[in-house]
Length: 259
Ligand code: MG
Ligand code: MG
Image 1: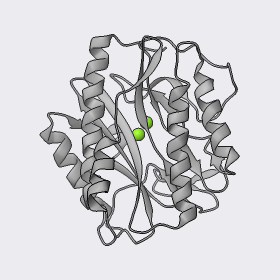
Image 2: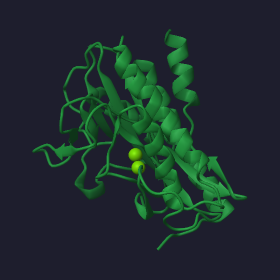
Image 3: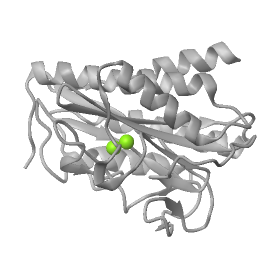
């Protein structure tokens, strides 16, 4: 059952999403070759708690960390660890925050140092997929229109669209109805209505769409070990149109400063 939100609830969700956005901005300030990913996790937890919020993922389904950190061929749900980031890596940082009873859940894939042009392209196209999907999130459309648009764009570049993991409704629970796949058929699925709040999160692979789970029972990797990218925003439908509750502005500002 889809839980539609009031404007007042959406305002709280915006703050939850913005806490995550600012957290990703903090991460953007420090990512570089030579650091380990546990350090990013600690930084994120401290910042979220300083904002009168709780880490949204910690303890969820037994997950022990604040961030999901997925490096290179890891798609999502990777564990922060002592692994040292290397020049040319990419890392998807997915972060959740629980604020006044509502969740924010959003993600960015960062470059570590200088990244190969074909990997840069994958990141670029995946970010485009996110915004192309968001554009479809209008009250004249249906849920699968979002995935349809994402799939068209990703596949036009020869990339694989992950099928086994999807976006989702978001609110007082981290995962609510409806599921929001990154693939689909035009005009299929539930009608989009005002008050819908969803996390749209294309997971796009350079090669095959097929994925596998590592023995840690969390980390999802590409079957062919080629890189994967992941960008996520929280979106509400207001007056028939998509409103993005999260932002990459803090990330963009931090990255611009470092150039
Ligand atoms: Mg997420
Ligand atoms: Mg999500």
